[in-house]
Length: 138
Image (cartoon, rainbow, N blue to C red):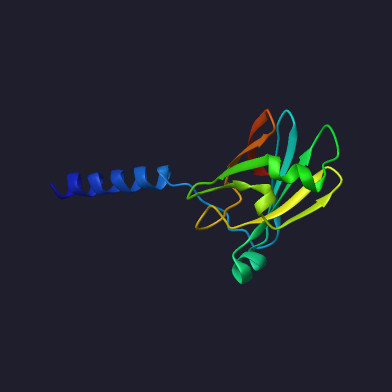
């Protein structure tokens, strides 16, 4: 009887250990990157910036042309992570523009950020739409 109970506990512990996945903490700045038909995207996660101001940068690059400040109000985003979703119009956000690259600040969409995380961003510009998956850039 004791042997069966011991074996049962051992089996449960073994199965639990096999099913858990290790998440790797981020200690330095990292970039999650993805590319769609019209856009290249970087989510730049900096743990120090997040701890201090609760924000990080996203850079989106239009592949076809340079963008102007007037174009910003025609770009809507939906940024999704494991724990949340951020939606908005780029023209309403704190932005920097350099040629075809737009940088803007967002809060994090995960309670904790790990190297194994993946994000999804939907970018709608005029009649064009891209849905892009972002993964850690090595």
